[in-house]
Amino acid sequence: MLRPNRSFMVSAITGSAAFAAGAGLSRALWMTLAGWCLAVGGFSLDFYADRDLDKVGPRAQLRHNPLADGTLAPKTGLIFSISFLFVSLILTLALSPTALLPWSAVLAIIIGLALHWFETPLTRALTLGALQALYVLIGSAAGHLTPGLMLLAGMFFFAMFGGRGMIDIRDYPQDVVTRVQTLPMRYGVKRTAQFTAVCLLIAFALSLAPYFTGDFNTTYLYLDLLFIAIGLVCAGWFAARPTPKLAHILTLVFMVGSGSLMCLTMVVGSL
Image 1 (cartoon, rainbow, N blue to C red):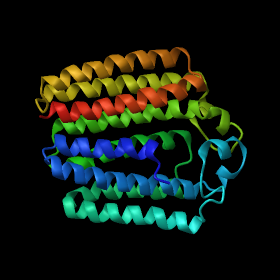
Image 2: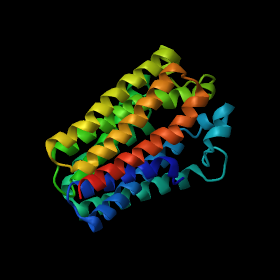
Image 3: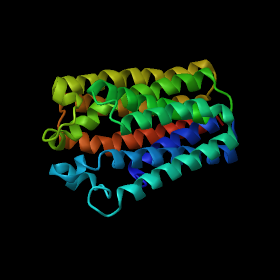
Image 4: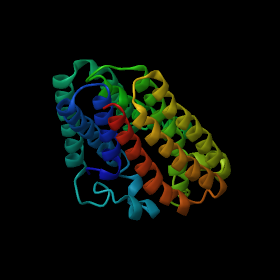
């Protein structure tokens, strides 16, 4: 229910943005916790919303939804999710009331996803990208939102907007036998891979732009160039061979690894 594979990255984005915004180490760590609780509440609510869908077919073996296999009662899962959302709200209000606006936007997307309002392939991709960008804004509200951080919010948006295509191709074998609408099911695997590559190229360009605002030091530039080099190799490889197996590898190694590298770049580059 803690969804560590998903909640870690967005909480790291929140804390890194807070530190880069000049919030200081202590407040940045507390903002990391606030972001983590919000992410856990949202991602675990996804289990509640999809509990019927996750009972049958390949999804039952791959998703390991405790609300679908009877490990936890749906009511218990719902209480779990709401509790984490409430803790995140209290922390956010205590640390930075101005962060409530992007926090509320995240909550609205979470509720919309749980109610299946965003079921088309493009809206699923848009919401994933928007969530990443909003976590940057939540963290930035603990300090000062700079032009560089605004560009980084755009970078994370396009990285995950396109990353949705990679995730959908990874999950294609299980989604093809369900009613879930995904990018490769609507537009084909090849076009989805091309869409992902284009979005990643935009993200790489946006990751470089903050250095020229003067908000980050030279170390940021060096680490970001490494981030871009790794990203270009992985994006080109994926565009040439968009298979579910490769997508599975890249979502683990590339998306998580590169995302962590960018968080490190934000922190070190702001020292």
